[in-house]
Length: 599
Image (cartoon, rainbow, N blue to C red; front, side):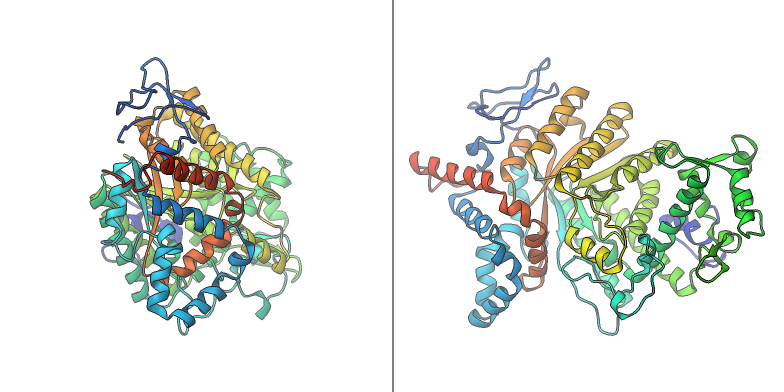
């Protein structure tokens, strides 16, 4: 436990201290032209938009704005013809499975044949140049400013990926409890398989401090480029992933214990927010399985004396008193035939790791506020995500009181994504802070499924794309409805799916959510789906490109992962390639092949 007399603690550390000790803290666009609509139209909320003269669609206070995702002249007016040719070539190459599967071997061969310098130059002319903005925060500034001139902001992401450091073993699967066969024995074969994911493996504390300094540069670069930028951070860069694994295991066990007790009270199948545990029945059950102490003593007296029940969010608050829970809460181990603590105390070293993670997070959040930047906490693997989400929520409680500063990420390819969204929205409603989310479909599908198969637990991923798509829209609709109700909610629709974007625009229109309110943001990766991003930006919607940067030789693992993650999208990017061809042919026919963007 952290010492009671610990010297100066940061605000976030004090606020989160109850995670360790259970002690209660004392917390002291730009609107541009909208092109003439020729094909797909989506009317969005009453909004006045200024026209540059050639656009036939103008804003009307009593009507709406139409966004055309197939008008190539407007979609690609930020690109010269060579950039269009590069996009066409790279997207086509990424559609071939052979090149995607063997990309690392091909790159290694290229380095041997060409040498590092020539290989780096080739990458800058092709894949690196397509998907990465530059090598450092100074080199990326021209691209950021150009995109901004055409209505598109940036989410800066320093995308260097690292392997396991010297002397640091690969983390063991602390999330064994993540499936029904979680009690299966361990061994060398149970080591995590995390290759290819952008997870930072712990080398030492000085390396974590270096990562923090890199994130600070991102924040400053984002703040210097625009007044409303984002900066992405990875929690695994700020501390030891093994600790996040251990904390995730405890959090998962705690929530599963609630579900187990709810099932004993015949509440299976009830919506997660509607499940309530009867405290008297719960204590009788625990006593019946051998618990000797009064578990209900950790429940606030007001709850015991009034309703006599607790829901899942109130159950999570009890977890804050973990120091007492470790002693009070013992459960039967069927295999061993004895009672064991459900939760365990962290060691002093583990608590020190938590303290340092919180200090780094707090430093980043303070700099974000100072520079007018919002922080986007990236999602990671399911066996790390419970801890990442919990820490992010606690930071939101501190920094999202007056405005949305910290955004959490929700992966909609997970079966429990909707429950997570609804619980966190309800928590923000009860505690009065701004809920801020980025919705993604997910980035680790193949890895998660392989691990579930290897460790013999239920696959956490939806069975197919259609189910994931339905989950995404269900989460999005829930959040949009919440925005319409109380306005203290923000969402980034991070999607390359034009149907999802159209759905969002239609729902905004139905709910009278205006683009200028900056409650709904849109996001796509740099180098992909410009035909979505730039028309949205030019129509005045807040839209952002996820802008990776870093040295060529160090950022290639990022490109390799993106190629693997977006394999399905790249193969299906026929529409984008058709639009690129269409614009190139239009420029050729109109003698604009030497067109240069003016901004």
